[in-house]
Image 1 (cartoon, helix red, strand yellow):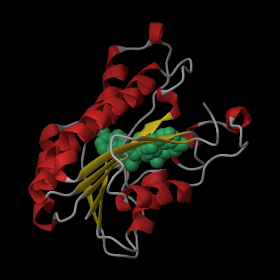
Image 2 (tube, rainbow, N blue to C red; image 1 turned 90 degrees about the vertical axis):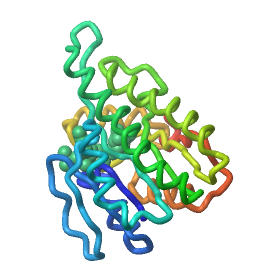
Image 3 (cartoon, helix red, strand yellow; image 1 turned 60 degrees about the horizontal axis):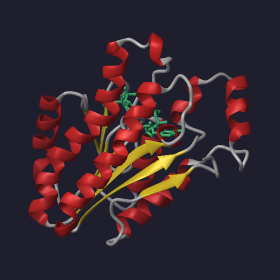
Image 4 (cartoon, protein in one colour; image 1 turned 180 degrees about the vertical axis):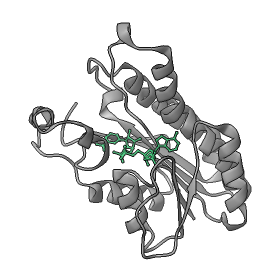
Length: 227
Ligand SMILES: NC(=O)c1ccc[n+]([C@@H]2O[C@H](COP(=O)([O-])OP(=O)(O)OC[C@H]3O[C@@H](n4cnc5c(N)ncnc54)[C@H](OP(=O)(O)O)[C@@H]3O)[C@@H](O)[C@H]2O)c1
């Protein structure tokens, strides 16, 4: 069973649709119901920042949890320079992007460890690797995912559970669309390949990590050469 958080988002809805061809997929959303997908998948409203809500969701699907693959995609980006950022915005971004991945992983690791198999794929960003002004909360949350990934990988390696992160550059769906056309062009110009990534690139990487038994604690950069 593949559990995709952020299934209503640009990357999430693509992954749910394409992975559901080969896997039983359950998706979570928060404020937008995901588009209907022909293959039978379940969608659940889950606030990943809320520990009780996460536990309740996992209890609801517990009977179906076999060969669990967790894809931690839920995330938000709220820009702001450090000296002007409110504590509320900082907390909201960190809670969604970092604590959310921790809470989902914590609940599902119980099943993975019992079954001695599992996969966790965290979605980080190039923004957590380089300094981009105005992204302090997002950048810190995505850099935090590197530590979460490596530590959970070490803790669970002996149980055949792999934990990896994809550090994405800029993709043509999802979050990028909050930018206006001119800003998008400026961003595109910074990418050595001069184009945004396609969600099929992400799907290929996800399938590769699902198939790979011996890759764990790795950060895979997918950014068109942007460093
Ligand atoms: N697209 C890119 O270029 C890019 C680049 C680097 C990294 N990433 C990372 O990839 C992931 C997906 O990105 P995307 O572009 O697909 O983003 P997106 O279209 O903005 O989707 C974000 C998803 O997160 C969900 N979400 C937000 N707050 C939540 C909460 N409190 N509880 C549960 N779910 C919540 C949203 O649900 P609702 O809409 O239902 O509220 C939505 O499904 C994010 O973690 C992002 O940081 C994306």
